[in-house]
Length: 165
Image (cartoon, rainbow, N blue to C red; front, side, top):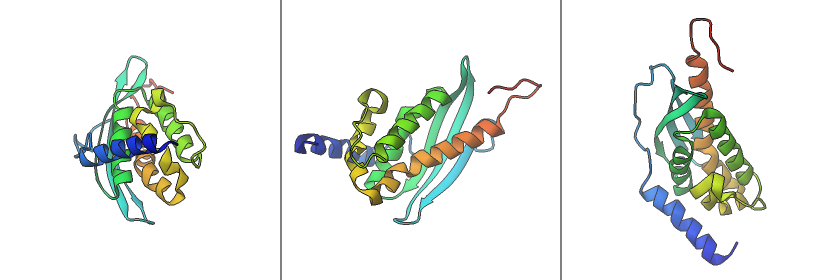
């Protein structure tokens, strides 16, 4: 990666760290379609409490909102902001696909070319993938989101004998 590109990526991460999107828990965690999880990275002390709100859309479940409170390094904080931007408003299946693309980037040890169309600002974390100790920081909120989304889906299954796969 060029020094110029590396510098741009660092700026994107710092911008999301200094000006986080969707920070601050919103909504009632006991409402239908809402789940809240708390994840900790014991190796560095990063923590995130993340709340996901799913609603029914014409083509299945939609990620209506993601909100969070978090403490930790700039990478974990910025990754949480970027993740929320990327999944809010998307059908759960599409959001899970974005999650998988980010996971592949992070597990690629710097050898995976980031897909800007899918990851948008998430491409800034391409350099992080070269540092195994920091990969967990970048993935903390993504794993929390996946966990909360699974809980929200199971907690809010439609009633009345109709089920959605």
